[in-house]
Length: 507
Picture 1 (cartoon, rainbow, N blue to C red):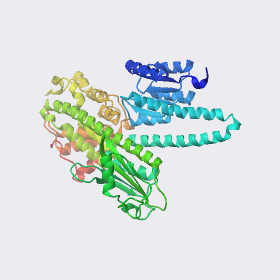
Picture 2 (picture 1 turned 90 degrees about the horizontal axis):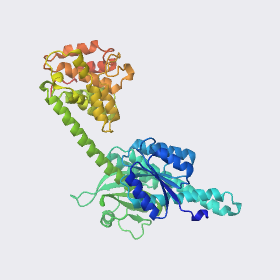
Picture 3 (picture 1 turned 45 degrees about the vertical axis):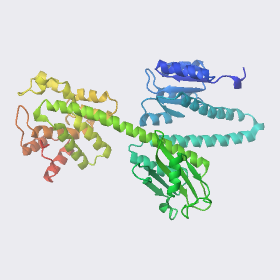
Picture 4 (picture 1 turned 90 degrees about the vertical axis):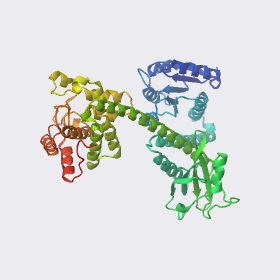
């Protein structure tokens, strides 16, 4: 059989049988040969015995996951394009896939038509690549080879740019940064002299500017604003507008030579408009610029949706966990709002010790939830009015591990989980649960430990009255270098001297 007449073979790798069945039936009907595997290890066996033109793979699978499979394919036969599918996208996974030569990254649930488009696109690119290899052996077709090479270079550059756009937006952690990235990327990718992002608001007649930027090397570029009727037309028609030449377009500023306006849609509704302008000489935007800005707009919209969804999930989960903490503290009226105070003091210490915004956010979470593991401790031990027996104390010592396990089950907060697990470790290695010592203990755990002990000692308990603050501070000073990190203790004492330390036990 002629090579050009052979059916192209697709390999689908997923541990969900129904996905394999649906994909197999659909792509067989579309004229492809379809092979399936339930994990990366089975896929490697298939690749050793079968010719494969394209591989679809999930990330999370038993025995051998999709990232390891992509790396294997990249090292053994980098002509096989790999498309990753996942229901749990993350920045780490996206970066890992790009490093291993993955050509596309689809988010479950995946539309079959979307999968087919991705397959046909990467197969066309693969055909160009394979054809290029063959043509290198045919000297008489030199012109065709040179043309093909130019096309491949363009395709590679385009793919690299598309991957970079996807990667940059995947790394963004706030909607404000999304808007800034849209504008900065527009100036860089489309060589615009000015760019602006406008957001729609149902309560006002015209969109309002969120962010804009101009090319500092072009005088007057920062003062550009496109006519409101052009923006309104894009919003009304829900279609992009390319103004190559200012002729016939009324209302353009005198220094604008070419303009681009692209609507950003979220759930099929125009959310905002990306506008850009060229102000220099005879330069103008092209259809290629329109394509790139449309792609930037779609990725920005996806990023905003994902951030909104993540923030909603995060808040719901945090609220649920915090309710558990409130329930625990409500069992003991002497410790109510202890976690709130510990979190507040930990953040204050962190600010004094130049923690990053990310670290302060981790302290906020970990401080509120550091005692959530006490939900697994019996009331007769937790609320005991007299001293604990050795056996009871061993039970109490389980609460950091229980808390870390609770948070760890959610799969979202790995660093926070470790802070909670190790907040009772001692600087000299005599703490629990693992007896870590010095720098082995995460820094934020060492910081949280001081905040926790300060509030616990200075607050009343069922079995004792609150301890005077001066005694608490003296006790913590004496334990610097044994129980506590001396730098954290020094910071606590300095805050006290400067009058910045909140009174322990106060709500």
